[in-house]
Length: 196
Image 1 (cartoon, rainbow, N blue to C red):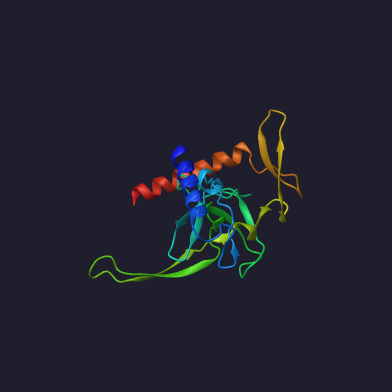
Image 2 (cartoon, rainbow, N blue to C red):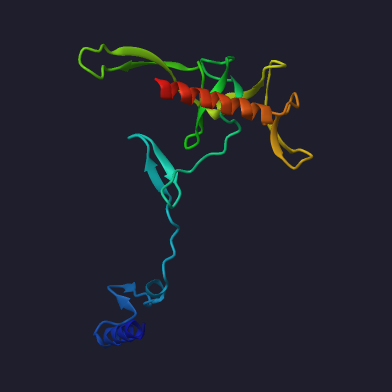
């Protein structure tokens, strides 16, 4: 640091010894030399890392290169009603969540046609129907008992457990029975997948 200040002082003395006046250079006044940009450490904001999911998709990431995950008002196993789009008004159960882009897959809703190539020689190709993702803002929690769609609320029960409930009906969504049913369904699907 002392070396840079002495070098700057030597530069200023050599400028003053020149035949040109130190106050002007071709009619333009010279600005005094400042050391502040050289000495101050530049503190820049870390720019967010961008993750490429597909060629055209770019998602913001955390510094550890994991994608930013969105909080969603629905969970796997919830019964929802589609409130916009060409599938508006249909009711189904959520089978999968994608938190990086805030989309959900609802069983038997938003079906897309997929052409599958044959994997082996002699085996024909197929045209199958798969469920496409729907943005989570386009679905609303649905009560099968009262046939009404409602926004979700959060409350703490007497035992200290935090649960979700439907605002219109007051029906609690996160009950122990629902979770038992959900885990049993998952076990059955795993057994079926293992047997095939």
